Amino acid sequence: MARTSHHRLLGILRVIALPTLLAGCASLVERAPLVTPERMAAASGRGIDPGVAARGRDLYVGACARCHSPVAVASRTPQQWDGILPRMAAKAQLAPGDLDALRAYVALVSPPAR
Figure 1 (cartoon, rainbow, N blue to C red):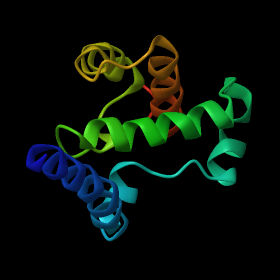
Figure 2 (cartoon, rainbow, N blue to C red):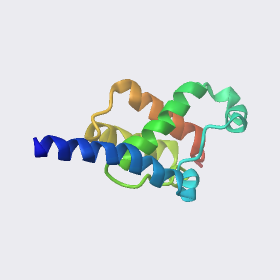
Figure 3 (cartoon, rainbow, N blue to C red):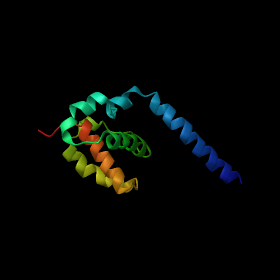
Figure 4 (tube, one colour):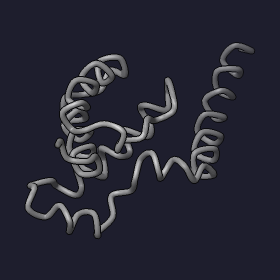
């Protein structure tokens, strides 16, 4: 019984503490920029679905934060992310659709390859 209560308390702390910590961290938005209407307008001809990209950001922040702080998306090109995301998605046990959402997000906010 005590073990179940302990697990329940840890679960509650994760639900409350993690979002509170992330919301208070201004640099999170710098590392994982929001999917804004302006950003979507700038990418209008690139075939990126805004809803999919927004879900990708949520996954990026949430799934990555389970193991480590999210890396600045702009620190890598989409091609570099193509090598990283499948490994990380496998470790986080994400669904294939989740990987597509992550790819859409990083394509939206990372710098183009030179």
